[in-house]
Length: 394
Image 1: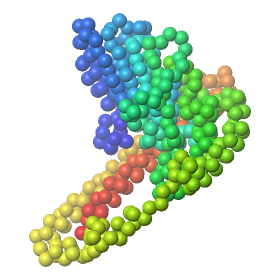
Image 2 (image 1 turned 90 degrees about the vertical axis):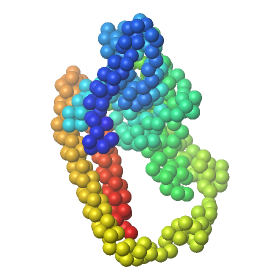
Image 3 (image 1 turned 135 degrees about the horizontal axis):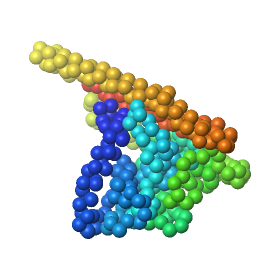
Image 4 (image 1 turned 45 degrees about the horizontal axis):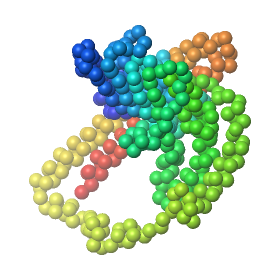
């Protein structure tokens, strides 16, 4: 998934295309021979499996082929998948196509989604910036699945007959607050103070502020909309009042031992750090020792010089490698996104509010995601460069 998986990796479309070919070459002969086949797809391979369904059953009706599917973290999830929310968008500079929805009625299928997983459970009303930002961080923190997670899943409602069962895995904490929780001691209490109210505001991006996912039928392909119903807004004042009270109780409880994340004070780590016999103290005891030993060996000096030059070269190459994805992100914002805005405007001329509002909502989400992905690319490059330069220090 260029550039998130590296500047020299395949684009999403290239990878998916190759994956569909590989999968079809594997399962089609078995199915033709009447051999039952089960397909498990996780994340991008869930998209591959979804497109394989369409290839095996182009008519889009219940197939007689003995195949079944289990999809986890599906970006083509009909009511929540990022590739369905913005169906039809093509970002040429990144090699990314928003394919639409996983077929619901082709084969017996089970789809598992983590609440707030930004790839598989994206905001239905992306004009809500908090929801968009939480979705991006959900890609970081909620796009992982374990057997323990699956055991907590519950079934989502569907509309009419369908061959697919949809499961939602609840997420305890908002991904938006996970970076704050990483701060020692004070991070969790502050996050617990903010989380009740912030959860309602984030959830409004899905509609009902009580749920971190769209509560409409899970099997109906659902693109993004402009605003949730008025009834959802009317719930907010009461919820925010109770949420503020709950947040204060959680914050105090964390320090008194009754909150969701009690604070524990320990000087053990500090004591061990200052212990002269510890590895850390020993490593800091004489920073010039290694340098002195190297200086007495001319051959080592030559080797170190060559290694230093190679390290600097690698760091420069890494820095240069960030220019291409940065240019491609900018290209996407200046070409593909405006073209998508124009199509949204023209498709909704009969409703002036949607014609103007939907492009704004789309841009809120897409600019947030592109900006966040660019930040991730730059952060990874900075980390790589810093690690390389640290290697130059004797």
